[in-house]
Length: 326
Image (cartoon, rainbow, N blue to C red; front, side, top):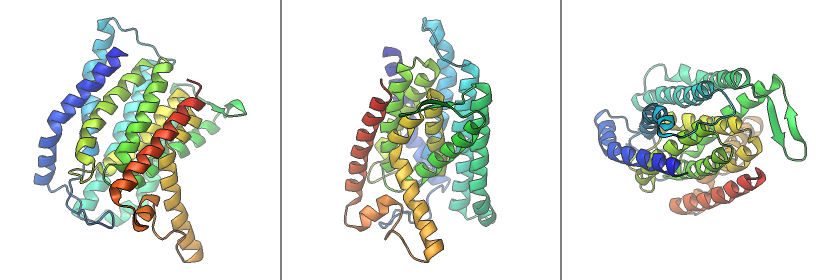
């Protein structure tokens, strides 16, 4: 445990040193939001916080992981370590690049914006399917554990199920990232829960990855809480939601994933229901969607919405760990 805590602190320190110059760089590159994301105007806030986390975690992992075994730490995993790491970082980086492209189109209002809008969901589904096939073939995972039913072997249907799960969390996280500190704070709680589960499962590669992710995220969250100096952007939204889902799938904790990450699913579902209701009935189901905007419109100040959502996330995380039998 001391090793993981040291990795977390190291990641926090490195990101803390790098993030202020990175924010200044985003301003110079004009990578700031030109749109109002919520009822209170917050335009021209730098986008791209997800990029520094993705870059820092990936670089530090590449530097630190080869040294772990040299310090006498026995690397344990139920899967081939190389395949497991390939899946984690392919998800982490590929979804981040897709989100970055969307951020660039949004910021600079480039001509392909409309065509990309029609393709972004299919592209996310395609990436999710590729990751799911990698999990199914390279890690030989096809079984999920369900309450009351026990272990269920889905065979090739596992690819369909996991693709939908990865896509749902990528979209749900991206939708949740609409208030200062909301998505990042909830993610921090989720990662602490899955860090606990990965250590209990003796999955050294995943536990080290999550430790780096948590450390970097804490440094980012310091500048993301109200009033935010930087936002994650779509690069962080798509990457972090999909990678969180992959962590749950690799650990075989699908039920825990739905419970621990329940906030992201509720946010995404509220937005989906609103769109369906508008299309079918021609009117809104909710005054505003997703859910956090509805709560704000009902009179809750933004910090209250965020903090109470964090509290709900903590309770869900405890429940998810409990259901996992840790």
